[in-house]
Image 1 (cartoon, rainbow, N blue to C red):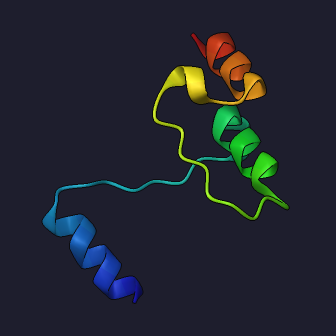
Image 2: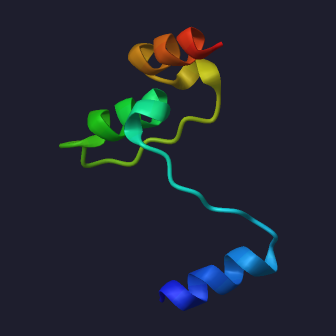
Length: 61
């Protein structure tokens, strides 16, 4: 499965890299908010994000 995923990534010219949670606080906050949530949430705009995540994004600007 990992090799198949790596092939798809290479075929499409994507690059995957790791960053520590401290370097991406909005993503870390979304992940922590998702614990215990059973339904799927799709955030397709900035305004639909949780208030805490929007605040972290605004602080990054």
